[in-house]
Amino acid sequence: NMITGTSQADCAILIIAAGTGEFEAGISKDGQTREHALLAFTLGVRQLIVAVNKMDTTKWSEDRFNEIIKETSTFIKKVGYNPKAVPFVPISGWHGDNMLEESASMTWYKGWTKETKAGVVKGKTLLDAIDAIEPPTRPSDKPLRLPLQDVYKIGGIGTVPVGRVETGIIKAGMVVTFAPANVTTEVKSVEMHHERLEQGVPGDNVGFNVKNVSVKDIRRGFVASDSKNDPAKEAASFNAQVIVLNHPGNIGAGYAPVLDCHTAHIACKFAELIEKMDRRSG
Image (cartoon, rainbow, N blue to C red; front, side, top):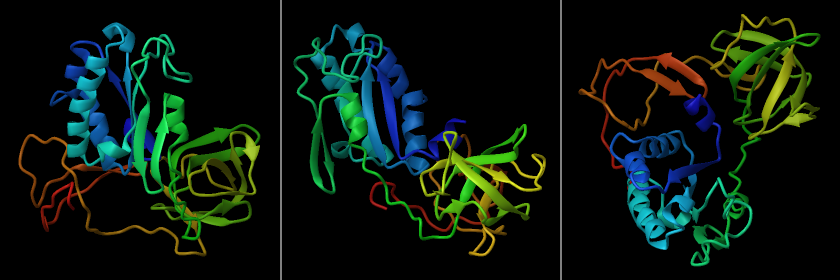
């Protein structure tokens, strides 16, 4: 679920515990802070916010915050993020400091800055940082690709697949095909947050009702596409750029991992390694 959810995100908020020992454990070689940042970058999430939580347990220490910024910047840079484009916000979720409103306990904190294509953006709180997320370009002119996150059977309505539109649009009356099973059907209606939509566009998490398809026919990981416009099809092989997070042995031809792609999890086999590249320079 962590992988399925992260693959749909535009921005990640990395929550770091400021407590003595807690931060160090999270950022250690096998720590979760490290693993989650790597997963976010690997899954294509290019915007990051770092929230340094539990500042109340450090007695609102500016020194501790700066120490955490320094260490975290070095490490997210290794992952592939540019620390100058990442807001660092000291917060206390328990007390609500710097979440929605400026904290009275951290008067030393002058706010965060981040570099964007449009220039430097500034703010004080975590909410400001969320508001400053840049909306990615939404490729609505490309053929429809909608990886299914789940499929529900809803009484009185029928089969309702749900997922996020990655490219293209989906609307009622459209004939869609689910790959790789090659199940074709008509879309009866499209909804988001229980409201009917004229159409779903990239970035929308939608549910859509389909005719004459059982819940048994389609499942998480299948991809819905427009039957009349370059429908998604199965590939016998493909070239991929792979980031190795951690691995006990050697990786070479014949290596057989499980592949997590959008919402699908599929066993595959490496045929050959073509080249090695540096993650930061490409």
